[in-house]
Length: 129
Image 1 (cartoon, rainbow, N blue to C red):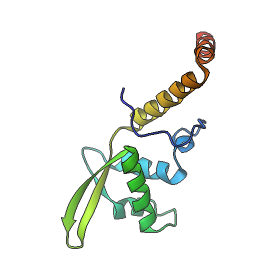
Image 2 (image 1 turned 90 degrees about the vertical axis):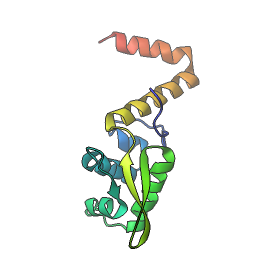
Image 3 (image 1 turned 120 degrees about the vertical axis):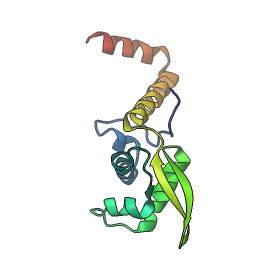
């Protein structure tokens, strides 16, 4: 499987995505996964409205979306309207695909760092079940 995006932090925990992404980045991704079904794409304003429980500026959401776009986690298309150019955002992969990619990256990093010790540990750890 190809790698989707990049791992921001190497601290994996039970919180899943929030251990790999900032809390706001994870919330924005969740909004996109919940609302972008059947090819739907969302404007920054729509995403901001879905995050109304978090008091933040519209520009903060736009900056987070731009970061996620540069990381390869979301895609965007430019559109034009009365106000000029705007972007429509959508997730590039499902939540499960992103989680799998992040886990794959973390495991590969452990193997590169610890070599045979990591492989031996994984064999011991997962052969018990």
